[in-house]
Length: 208
Image (cartoon, rainbow, N blue to C red; front, side, top):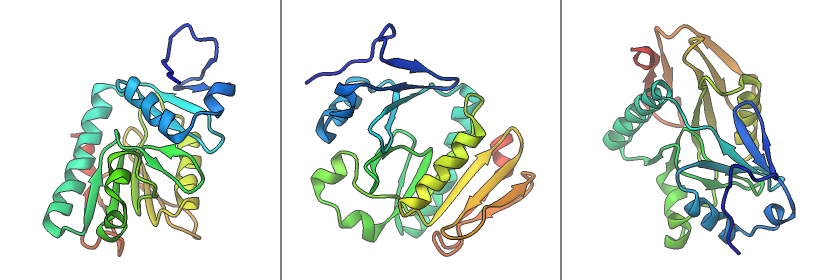
């Protein structure tokens, strides 16, 4: 069964910053069919929620892309130095325990978790929740939607999650079973704590 996204498709429900595809064929899509669907539409950023609804995100603007590249650069440089796991960019999808397929703006997976996967699982949407994720708010994102998404990461087993809002210069830090911590002002760094030892993200570089 093949699926393609067409702009005139009546099954697409337009939202402010994303599209949601619903319908019997969408809900019955197997994991393999969803993977092929993403390959057939590789120019789009696609996720699938736990209700098996397909979410098509708006392409990012140039400034958002630059900021995301800076976040990933800092994370990747730390990982190259310490070699404790694998880093992933926003094009990477993960198959989460709740059945959804999600793609954070940046993610980190420990070597132990990654090495437990088969080669086939690594090639497709890895069936795991990253230990660490970063989501960055863009101009088209709704902040409340992103905050709910951060709790979704925690429910699926994420140990540390950051939501970064560059325009408002705020960061929200999420940990399992604790309240959210809010950081105001980008003249500081965020600590990777014991999840990513000695990693720090310099927020000031995001707005240069």
